[in-house]
Length: 546
Image 1: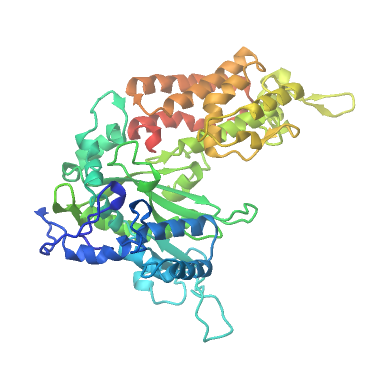
Image 2: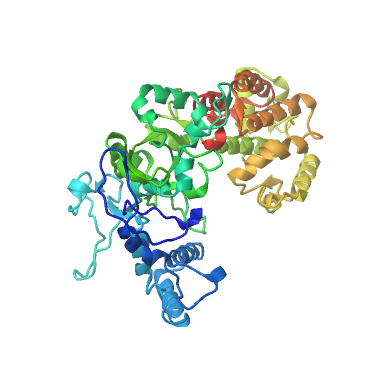
């Protein structure tokens, strides 16, 4: 990527021809201006598709057309061949001369010139190692001796790789943040515009961890343009058919220099790694992190020369990952810390609050509705007898020599369950507030299925307290409402230290109240993790930025 590329049309800047003398980058900050090389590099991307179209409202640049085309390719599952045929047809349809790319390969070449490409790094099929740098030319894995390529009967056929890691370099994207004067200004927001209130946290810069990092590394903190990053990783199924088992993992970085209303938005979420399936990498995820770790080391130690459009100069930008964000299972894989024993509590990592909230909501709603996933099972009732507690809920042997399960006050009876589900199915949400939850409600089956994390977030905080009020006794209803309020307060955009201290005390009391109601089987590790969320909020700031 050319360091002098500084015009970014999506931030309101117009494309203009600039002339000037070229100047090499140095380690010191120096005044510089864009030159003709920048124009040569981006003119293919920003030129108008049709030179004969004089209507300014309908002008499409080559770059905007390519971006829209690739977006449609992904969302509609189009093959490369289909895109090639579409481009040939478009080139014929548009008046001549035009600048429609000839093929999908040419589209990718244009994006790669702007630093929007990626690197294919070959990997061992069993996640043992990467064929990378010193092992780049090897044909077999050094650990398990597995072949790099698929076996082929025809030797003349092109070799087919068994597994490929896609790596998206970080440096070009950090450089582009400073090539727009508006973005460059926002990258200083945490220092220049943030309200420094000791008792209130609105941004990660208000957190204890950020301030301690600044004290330990004052040289890094001296320049507000140095980038602080958060790293998140999780798995997903890329296929529309969820019954097909496939787990692809991604690693995403977030620049925390930006204001809180920008730093977690999609345009500033930097996808850096796409780890192929079909199985999750598990504890071998560190093998795939190697290219990213190498680049982060370079950014920490030597940085990268970057042109700052706001100050009209070049400077050496450094970057550091200040924390990670994961759900509980991924936290165990990424940190190497066991999450299945008595020492499973998190260390130096941020847990995904919405993942914990979803799990707690699922446990709660399944138990209230008494579905097959309920925690109020026969074994849970046997635990009560073994622990000699709650005699009224212990299993009883009837006259037919079978065990009877006494009804619990925290479980809906059939009529209450039907009434609750019908009410839940009738709720209408504002457009964009939540998905169509009514489609996930099965009144006849007596359960709620297929809820996404955001749906559980809305139901837990806004809907559940209202829906259960008329069906449960006060001593059962109140602790559930208090748990709902807990998630409302911790997910607020602005939190105060005093409120977090008070909430930390209340959380213990809420869990104690719930322990008096639900059986011990209800309290899985996810329920216990609520205790740690308050400490993480103090250390890392508002949940919305994590």
